[in-house]
Image (cartoon, rainbow, N blue to C red; front, side):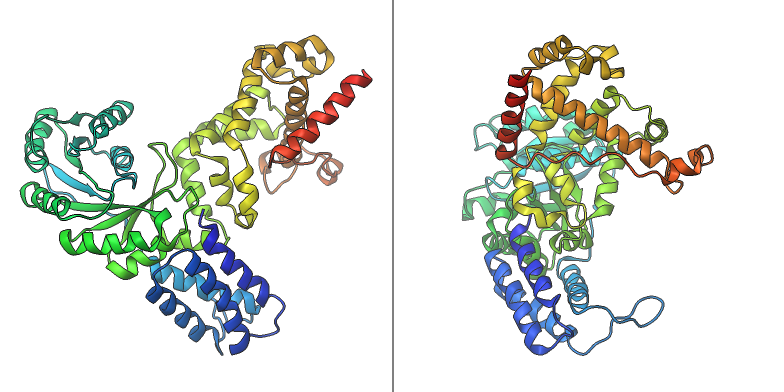
Length: 484
């Protein structure tokens, strides 16, 4: 995500890391790296010049203040801190608030065809349901053959009603939807309007007519973050004709260049409300300028990661599980439960990207087949008996068990061996963490001093970063089988 922009800031930081102080000369060279990446990301030229000018001006001859005292920091830290502040200023302030009329509020979704508008409409409905609203989806895109059906399928997944009526014009359909909302006791309408491959006059007149008849409380424009400056020009025209209230950026989980994210607020003076970070209906996040700026600068976004966990984890149950695991009571069934929880949160690469420093792995993150790897692990664990999940050592003792599990899951015996090694390493890690007073004060009083000072006897399992590693492991496994 946003690797194109991040690479420029990373190169600038690496260049300044060997400098004793910030000078006009080395700042110019660092900003040249940033300029290259911003241009490649297709950010708006005026926005780029404004950003670079502000960073340069604030980087020269100033001492950074903390909340306690003045302190000297390294040149690259000073530079990156200023970049972060300017990025937040450029994209913010963050404002995901939505206000609605009573008793029935309404949102009009607009955007070009292919931007992910219909899927985003469903995502927004899911988000608003979590805020105690009862939405009714309105299929106002009557031109694309599959649009109504797509919305109906998504509505069924969300257990949310969808209103459509053949032979009725989009503006009249949106107006009539209020009566249907009253009938179904819904307090919110979301209009999924038509899009085109490009802006045209008939489309804009139709949207203006819907706005005039239905009088939506909010007009949100869905923007494809992968198409850069073109999307900004489109947003400016939609805003001129309709006066949008905010934007939703989609496809930020893919190879987004990111120019739209940096430019759209500055060009239109309207906030980014949400960002789409995956294809699932639950993968819509409130936009946080500080979070996106932090990810661009490869400092992660722990706040967003914590929020993801809170949405998918039962806190009370998680605390019980954690205490049990720290005592060493960790089974393959627990391992399976953790994998399923991670899968709910979205692609593994997206989760890892929110950790500080991991964004620099860019190309390697793309090669991580997180979903596929977790499915393979899940299939192997599900092929085990309940007793084997509690006592994995039984599988190691009996070759027939290992062979049965491999056949049942469609995997190789070597993969079952690798899974058991991973599990053993993780279990060892949990036990050693349980001996650390800072992590488990409840257990620390029961541990002896030698146990607390003992060195861990495990290594973290390596991530599967590509096909080459798989081939090497398969080759080693074949050699072992020949020796047997």
